Image 1 (tube, rainbow, N blue to C red):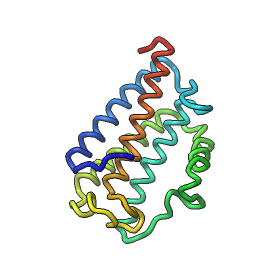
Image 2: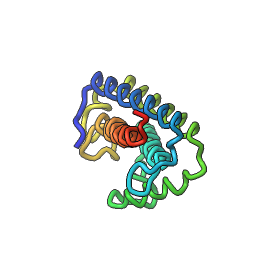
Image 3: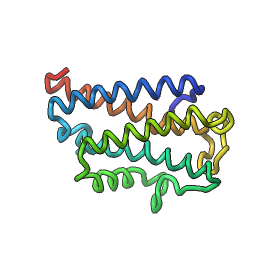
Image 4: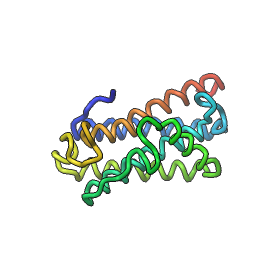
Length: 168
């Protein structure tokens, strides 16, 4: 389980995890390894597409909460027990999305989440149950799980891949 962060810790960890991932993605680009298998049958491109989707989803969920709406989580037509199928649908839908587009989308989602971390009041960011979709977690934890944790896992996959390709 992801730790629950304070506002400052969340901002610092979000910035750090994204920066590390961004540098590693530059290394993947230089080594031309976006089509290399990162985990199971998924390439770096595939895993990146999934990470982008989840970051964008949290942006959408927070926006919906601020509008007093209840988004369908994790996505329309999917239950939480179906996240593997959801992730595969993201991979399937992203096959023709160029890496620069995925990276731009990730950067934009992280920037929007950073803005939310800066502008949500303490109750909205750090309290449990503020928005209907957050259930038993504060928004800060949803952000952490869908960015910091996922960026760290992709970074680990990339480091392993670059090391095996003698690029690290």
